[in-house]
Image (cartoon, rainbow, N blue to C red; front, top):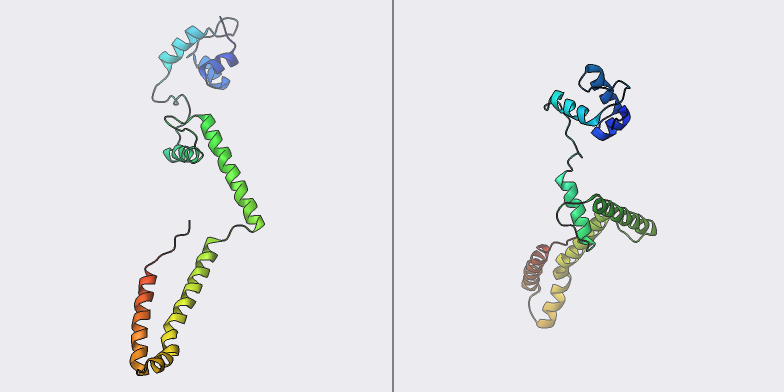
Length: 179
């Protein structure tokens, strides 16, 4: 059954302009009425097409990072994502990501989210103030403690400073994790 040029182009998965060029150059035979016999044309197309110049048929390959992102998003939501990722799964992951982004924007507008850099700077400042207060504490209380215990003030202050600094060194090894 003969086809129009546009119908044959759809059949081949190419533009109608490509079919017109192939017909004009003689690569694809036209019927006397201007239509195309798909069986004859397919055979002629395959015979006269240089495989090295042919464009790959099908979809473009998708980056593995994108596929991994889709799988991870679906897995976080408890949805199956094994084997090849389908378009429906990718679309679902995209919609989930958009919903998460919208929720985060709303939380930011409501003031429920804090800026990580600001929070880190605040924690650092507070920790430094706490450390400074502890470093200065032995000088303030050593004389009082020494008087209560009947000891000399200077050795008491040195001992307190040594133990406070050792304790602060232990605390400095702790690193907060902001996720």
